[in-house]
Length: 159
Image 1 (cartoon, one colour):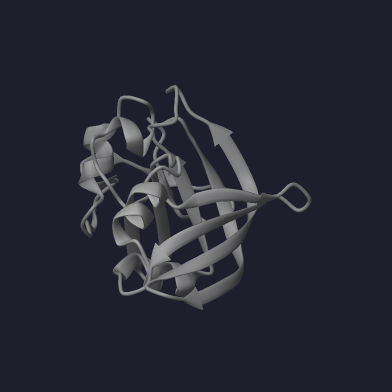
Image 2 (cartoon, one colour):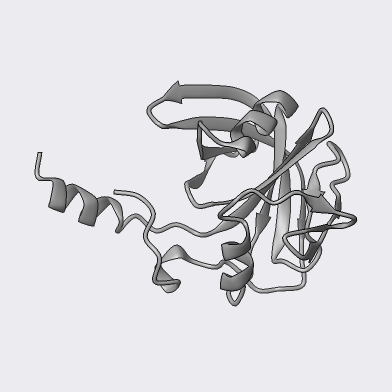
């Protein structure tokens, strides 16, 4: 395989950035993710690639649900806060104020472009990331304009 071409072309796939959050058994997870797509209208489904050997994957798997918090166009610094595991400190994660989502009680950030709250319906366990398919149970727009695109940050993930 032409590794250089593969890397270059796979990095051309456009991705927005999100903060995926979940909570289970007294543990909270929050990670910046980019491999997200809508997968169905009826029922409303999304598919998310989550790196398997992470705290976020373990918590999300136990919770069988998560929220995707949509980052605003100017929230590159916020996205960077969630590259590594951060635990809650009071009502903040990574210095960002959060509250509970309405249905599953996962962390949501009111100062972002919005969120979708999801219940996992299937996990495809292949490769170093699992593809998690989830039904959208609730959605709310926030005060910021989004999305923050990976291509605008100067960062690379994938390929």
